Length: 232
Length: 232
DNA sequence: CGGGCGCTTGACGGACCTCAATTTTTGTGG
DNA sequence: CCACAAAAATTGAGGTCCGTCAAGCGCCCG
Image (tube, rainbow over all chains, first blue to last red; front, side, top):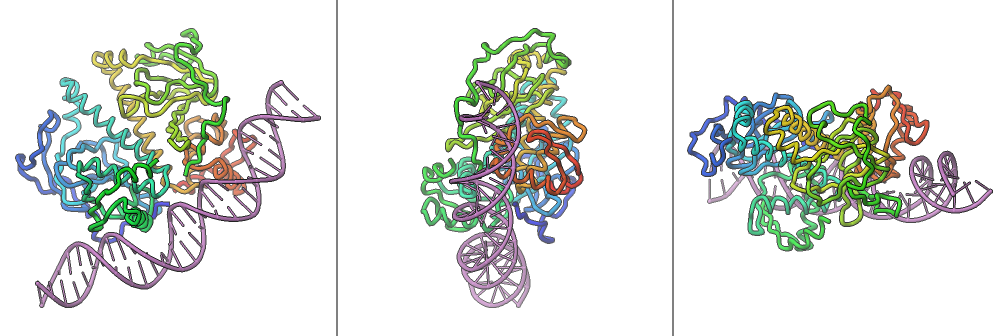
C-alpha cells in the first residue's frame, strides 16, 4: 500500500534533542500568548526536517505552531511511513491516546513552535477551568482530525487528493491560491498513496482545469465546486 | 473503494426513539455500576440492528455496553457505508470530536446499554475529579481507536483482516477462539474492503492454516504468530 | 420442502503500485 | 550570475491487487 519514504538518507530528519534547539526570545511571534496555556510556553525554532519529539517518548510537552509547519509520523516495520497529521501556524499538537508518543513530530519546513510543559498545564487545569477547557478542546480537535483522516482513507485516489487540497486551502485561509508547505512524499504518506499517484491525480485535475500548478507547491483552485463534487 | 451496504432493505436498522426502548431494571447487568459515572445511568435494551442515536443528533448522552455489541457508522452520499468502531461489553462510547454526532450508533446484535446523561456527567466532573478523569479516559480511548483505525486503513487487504482478527481476539479476551458478533458486511465496511475480499482473505488464512472457521462467525486462531507477522 | 439470506467462489476489469526514464526545481560553488 | 550536481516531480509501461458482477452453496425458518 503506502510505499513510504524508507528513511532515505542523511538529509532527512536529523535527530535533535529538544534542549539543543535554538531558543528565541519570547516577543518573537506575533501570534504568541493569546491564551493562558500559551503564557507558560517557550518558543523554539527548528530547521526543516528536524525531529521535535520521537516515537515512544513520554508525552510531557504540548506544542503550538507559531510559524512554519509540522508533521507527525511513524515508520512501519517494512519501511513504509505514515503521516498522522499536518499542523500549520496556530495549531496545537502533542497529545495522543496513550501515555507515550506513538507518532514522532518533525518540522516540515523551518518552524517556530511554542513548547509547553504538560504537567504544568494539567495541574493548572485543576484550578483554572479555562485551561481545562482548552486542553479538552485540543483533545477533541485531535479526535476530529483522526476521524477525518479515516474518512479520507476509505476514498479513491482522486477523491483523496481533491479532499486534501480543499482541506489545505481551508486551513491556510487563502484566496484560492495555496502554498503547500510539504513535498509530494509527505502528501502521499498522509493520503496512503504513492508519490506517482499523487502526481498523476494533480495533473489530471489540472487537465480538467479544476486547478493550476504555477509551481509544484503552489496550487490555484479554479473550480472548488468541481473538487467538492469529486470528494463525494 | 468501500462498496458499502447501501441501506439494503426493511430489515436493516429500524429507527427507534430512545424513550421507546425497553427499559430494564437496574440490577440486571452483572458488570453495572462499577464507577461513579455508571451510577447515573439507566440500562436500556435494543434488538439487533436498531439505531441507538442518529447522525447529526446533538451529543447529550454517553453510553456503556453491558452486553451485546454496538457499531458506529455513517452513510456516505453515494451509499457507501463507513463503520467507525465496534464496541463490546464493557466499552463506553458516544463522545465525538464535534458538538453533534457525525456517526450514528446501532446495535449489531441484541444489546443492553447503560445510558448516561452527558450534562449530568460534565457538571459532576467539575466537582469529582474521578469523573473528570474517566471522561478524559473515554476521550483518549476514542482517539486511540481512531488512530488505530487509520493504521488499519493504510495496510493491504490481508493485513487488515489479520489485524482485525487479532484485535477482536484480544478484546473478547478469548482462548484462541473468537465468536464474532458482526456480519461480513460490517467487517468489510470497517476495514474499507468488500465482503468478497474479506471472505477471500479469511479462506486464504484458513488455507494457510493460520485460522479455522468452524462456522462463519466462529474463528479459531491457530497461529497468532503467523497473523502478527502478516500485520506488519 | 422451499425460499431467503448470508457467505463463498470464480472470472474479469480497472485502479493503483512498481520500476524506470525524463524533466523540472533546488541548492552550491566558481 | 551562471554552471553543475542533487533532489524533487512528472511521465510512461507493465503488473498486481482488489472491486465488480454473477453464480453457487449452506443454513435457518417458515
